[in-house]
Length: 153
Image (tube, rainbow, N blue to C red; front, side):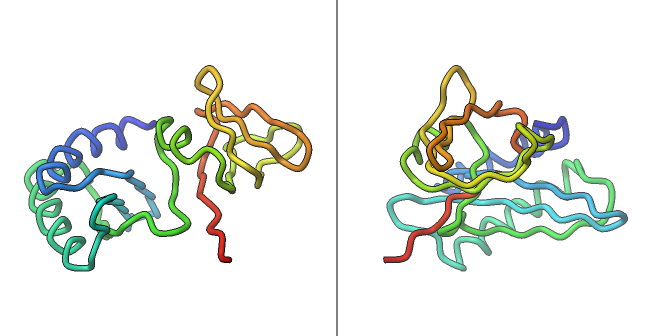
C-alpha cells in the first residue's frame, strides 16, 4: 500500500467507523491535474443507502479540508462496495473464499497479468486462486486490483 493510501486510511477510517460503518476500502487514482478518491463503506446488517453515502461524504470532505492530504484537485466518491466488490485487505480475501474473483497483477505472473477463478483464500499471506484446473499462489503485494465476480442465478 502506498504512503498516500496509508495516510488517507489513517485519516478516514476513524471518521467512517465513528458514523457506524466499516471502511471497506479506499482507492485513490491520480489522473494528471485531477484525481479521484473513492471510499467504499459497508454496513453488513443494514446495507448502505444513498443518504448514508451522502452523510459520510460530508464528514469525510470536512476532515479532508482540514487535514489536506491531497494537494491537487480531486473528486470524492463514496459508495457501497456493490455486488462486484473490490477487495483491498487480506481479511477480505479470507472472508470471500469460495467466490469467483477477477484480478489484475502489477507485473506478469507466468506470462499473464489478468486472472479469473475461484478464490481459495490466503496461504502465508499470498492469495490462492483456482484458475481452471490449476491452483495459483499469487503474492498479495503484486495485486493491482481484485473484484468479486457477481453470480446471477
